[in-house]
Image 1 (cartoon, one colour):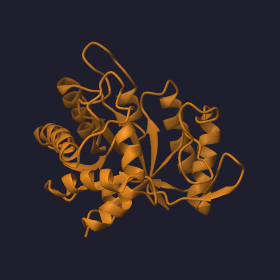
Image 2 (image 1 turned 180 degrees about the horizontal axis):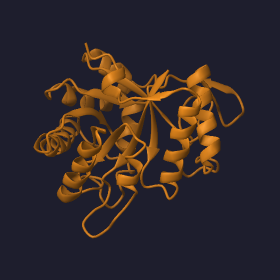
Image 3 (image 1 turned 90 degrees about the horizontal axis):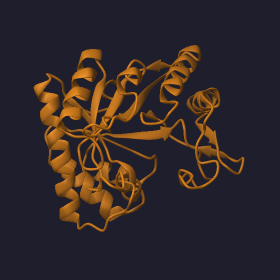
Length: 257
């Protein structure tokens, strides 16, 4: 049994530092790097990519809405062309840093409101994935299982990785519990690890109403900006190892043939 452990990183900006990027990379097998529109800047992108290449961690782009003030968590009404443009712009910028560091871009994972909107909206998912499909390298699309992103990836012949969250709870319909709802986050690293091991063994996770929710899981996400990100990463890695689950980057597990 194997799983990818991914972390959202590179979200510092200018003088402001956010997250525990390099420490978390000791446990992650893939990272998704902010590309400057919701967070991050050129120097942060360069340093984050260099750290990942030095550690052998697979790299993905984490493009979001052009909304630094809102950290990309506010939905924006963009046309299909605009969505495609902001995705290509951000992925292209990160890919340049990856190439300069001697690495290779593995995947694209949308950020925040763009991720959530594309998961449920066919037009938004289509615009974003169609843009990625025009880029070289046949990149993996990362998104929620059973989402519009999964359907769009299939239409465009791109590999898809179903993502689950270790530090978030799920509603009975399979959606993440909204951030502003009580119980949306799991603060206990051991509890989060137990939930993920059960999901990998049985294919189900407990929803907020106590029911069992079936989810496909190709990659588990940890948020690098969380105060307890390092404890979560360490605890989850140890729990996976104890359960006989090998951590392996998406490029080695997702069929790209």
